[in-house]
Image (cartoon, rainbow, N blue to C red; front, side, top):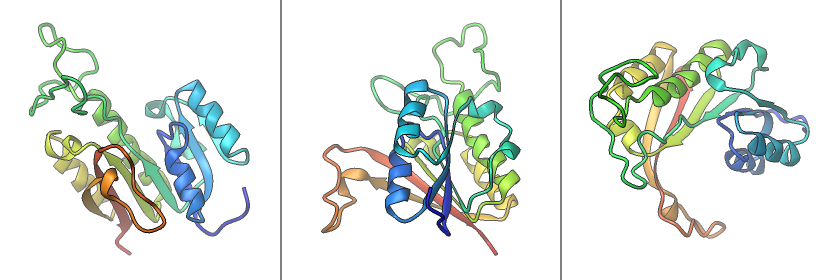
Length: 193
């Protein structure tokens, strides 16, 4: 990686889509973490000088990562995505990974909660200048712990901005936008200082 003033860490990095965007915007993609082997192999091929790790982020010791200026991460959306017939319950009744007897098939939000809190854990350790990410709109409108999650960011002295955007309509003369409609809830925060 060429030495750059602005550096970024990418959690839940997938195949590196957001890393490519940050790299193209002048950031040094310093750290990328994902749990899936093909994604990690793609990241290593695209960013050979990046500290790329294959890890379950819910078990990652964030002290083992170097500090960067920006944290990019998008909590899991499988539990809240409207794709198919997924219908998330408004209220979360259990704080367990395993469903209670008779609750099989109901969303318990455990993966959403764990991965959303992982961003907080990383920010608590590294005190990033900026934290940003995205999710489906239901992450903000349906997950009953969303407001407490925002208050935790405030407790870490971050000011979060939420933007509801659709990639099909984000365009300018140099970027024609996406061909598919994919609504998203984007969030960005910076330290208040």
